[in-house]
Every structure is written in structure tokens, then in C-alpha cells.
Image (cartoon, rainbow, N blue to C red; front, side, top):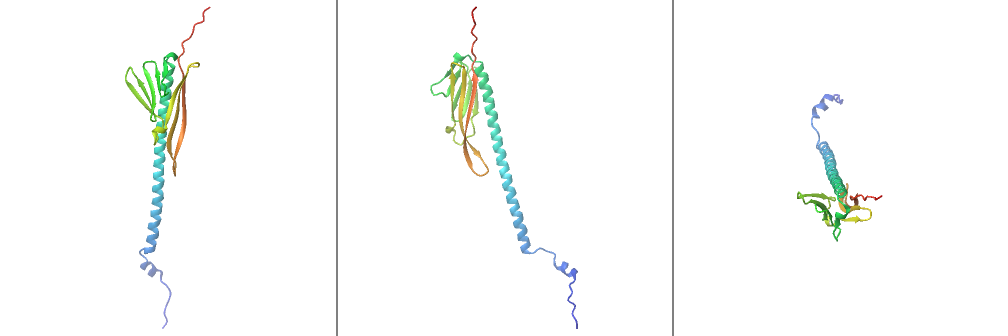
Length: 180
């Protein structure tokens, strides 16, 4: 009696209808790794987007402060500009005052009781952010000198950075008439 040991391919496919446990574990671990990497990249993207958004707001705030400061100083006669002893308060005539405290610059207009606040930078420790006002009587140059410390989020660590900002404007100087 002779036995036929040839394999019939139809028999193999008949028994091979499911995955083995090892194949399923490999597939699940592969998908888990891909989803973990994807989630990490999405979170990093959201954090970067938030940091860029904060930077844009800070830039916009500084630009608006610069415009207000320039206009206010330019329209105020030099003799009406006063700086307090601590150099943290600038009075432009009787109507406008600028104050620097705790990482904020505050602009107050007395006639309409309008108060505007400008963030120096989003700082984790606002007491480290400081500034001062100065007036040069000979040139009429009025300046805000700011040193703002903020925490910049990088991809791996939080690094404190210091930024020096100087806003300058020339005060209004009345023309002197020359007699002939």
C-alpha cells in the first residue's frame, strides 16, 4: 500500500482562517507604538501653537504700547514731562500717567479715567520683569527701558530668557522765534 504524501493547497487554506496569538500581539504593539508617537507629536504641535499665540499677543501689546507712548510724548511739551524718584512713574502733563509695576505697564488717562495695561512678557515671576522711565532734558528724548524675564517653552526644557526693550520718543519742543 502506497501513501500519497503530497500536500493539497486547499487543505491549508481551509485550516488557516484566523490569526495566531503572536501575530495579534505584534499587530497590537505596532499600533500602540504608532498611536503613542502620533499623540506625542500632536501634543507638541498644540504646545508650540500656544507658545506662538502668546508670543503674537505679547508682540501686539508691545507694538500698541509703542504707538501710544510715541503719540503721548510727542504731543506733550517737554516742560510738562515728569519722572518720579523711583523712575517707575512718568507723568505727561496733568492728563496721562505711565506706571511700571510687577511686569505690567499701566497707562492712565485722567480726563476719561481710561486705564490700559500692557504685559511686558508672560513671566512666571513678574517681579523679575522691571523697567524705568528716563527723560533727557537737553534732547527732549523720553524713554522706557524694560528688562522682561519670561519662560520660553522649548521642546525639552523651560529656559528663562531676558529681553531688553527700549521705547523712545522725542517730546514736543516749542519753536523759539528768532528776532531780526
